[in-house]
Length: 547
Ligand code: VG1
Ligand code: CO
Image 1 (cartoon, rainbow, N blue to C red):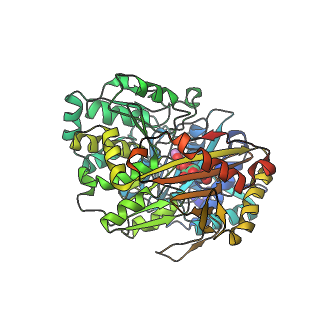
Image 2 (cartoon, protein in one colour):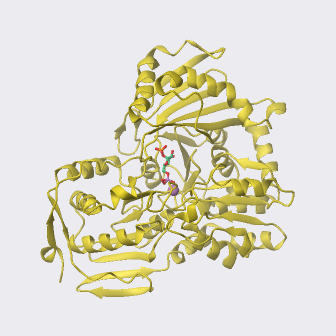
Image 3 (cartoon, rainbow, N blue to C red):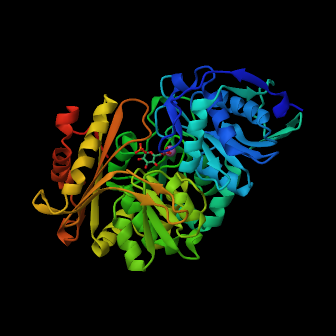
């Protein structure tokens, strides 16, 4: 039986650049595909995990270039590490939320998710790998730290030599005591969705002449959308765009935002726009929601889902509490306050929601980066968010813009934008944040754009469940009168630095609720640039993208 004792030991020098960022290890394909690189990372994971004897793992990815090769390496190393049973999505495919659900449902000891999410794919694109624990959520900071230090002191890895596994055929096969179970990537996920939503209601809504369009961007969600939206609910097949997963995403940048998914935005400007248009990213955890001449900001989306939770059967037992990442707009806080439930503020990255979800403190959470989710999984879930919105529209029988406008009349509108500065020189990005950090203590009480700074700090998070601390999670500057600027560096890029500047402005005046966010937030954007001295330090006089 080729368990640990029969594995071959391959000596290798340690790689010292395998530190995980906001969402796992993310690198250029040419870095991750170099000889021994993935193997050494996996060895560091296995050494840090202390898996129970005969463990079960889930494996799958978003189908990007190198997915197929990486899955086979994982299987051979899992064998060498004494893993007994691996559950893999057919063709090595699993969306991130489906993988999280599968780990939980099958009570696996964890899983490997192969994705660089919304980053471009193909041989010149990015690849990534995450380890999720038995709870279905991304490894917590203590574990990623342990994996990183293990990766720096390794002297080699253990792997079994065995023929490639056939992942195309559904079924279970045994090789020398190692069981590989190939599953339909959609089946278990669809069942979960059936428990959370009233499929008859959604079917009737479509049958009664409503229409949904879904942009899968050649990522992994195509098969999920086909099965759930088309086969089960009766949406028109022609309304699912780019539904076949491709290793290079067909040259698309699989990021569901108005810039990269502009074709969907264009569709929504037409007079015969669908009632709901949505897009997801490469690995299926993000969502963008649109309607006729209307883009729903992610911060508004989660606030409005909370306000309309009675339309979603999955929330039939109520919502205990909610959470948002720190840079996400405070629209959610306003609804939570009205409902008298707790609203937690966490650092960026889904893993920070996991303890809150696991302990039952929250049932709904989200991020400004087009991520929304609930306690059904420990990852954000793009298609779940789409089904939530279909449910709200069907139940209320109103249009998305009408629902949003009524919401803003009650709670005010949190105008929101993220400005990203792509900086070639990573050190210049660090310098902007370091400069701000130095100035933060003196900021409160000073004037900024005609108002006074009420609070300024570098966000420090203490997890209410296990007490763990996460320091330096982003600079927040809260200005009197409902404005806020947040600065942080991206932790998912693979070259240079991306400085993210998040702008928020709360508006209560009824006649100012339907303005153009670009126009409303332009002065705050300039103020943010000046306050952080961005142009002088980086040479950039304007953001590279405004989302
Ligand atoms: C970005 C987003 C963050 C999200 C992360 C992973 O991180 O800002 O909200 O959790 O991507 O998303 P950063 O560090 O680049 O700002 V994805 O869809 O990987 O899984
Ligand atoms: Co993603």
